[in-house]
Image (tube, rainbow, N blue to C red):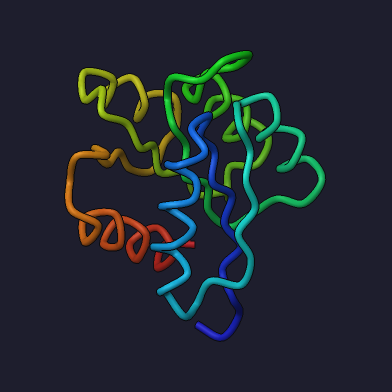
Length: 123
């Protein structure tokens, strides 16, 4: 893969966004990382410039990650979305909304990196 991956991190918790950015920063194929604090802001950023990959939290104010996933996938089906949450009971719902993968936030970073590699490989 020659071109860099553009990523959007969507989470209402600043610490979660910073942790994800730090992890992604170790991955050499990442070109840009943008941040959104809720699904509504994520939609605006995707409209402005669609990323290759979105890391989406589920529970957020204004618009949750499941609704944002549905809307993004409806308009930009090529955008890969990995839902990240501690609420594993939403796995099936996230995948039904169009997420390409679900990763529990309680899993080790390697699980997320594996899901990222798979999503990027499939783009």
